[in-house]
Length: 119
View 1 (tube, rainbow, N blue to C red):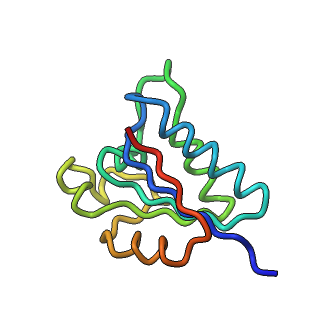
View 2 (cartoon, rainbow, N blue to C red):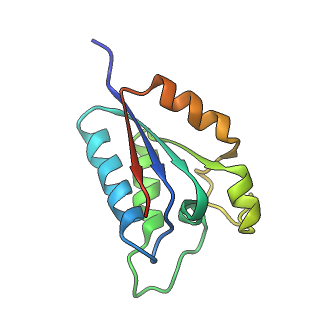
View 3 (cartoon, helix red, strand yellow):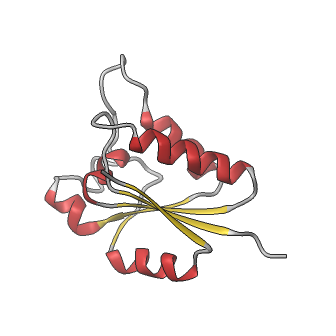
């Protein structure tokens, strides 16, 4: 029996709400349960991939992201959203891939479930 596939759309950035934390904790749990997980960063969600995140007093969302990717999560970020916010290949984590929105559409078409974390 093939693995179930879940696609996550994250459109909120870290530190402005708990959506990024919740989305990545959900992704890690789904991976632990054997799901294939795709996450697409959209709008302010593209800040999740930013390297050297935040002051040390806040939880490091980058660690949750790297953990999920190391477990096999596929991660992509919207190119236009990233460009609009000055997020580019020079200031993102190595595990990230900036791409077009069409990749998200393909993931949704292939997913058993699509979940959105937005505000």
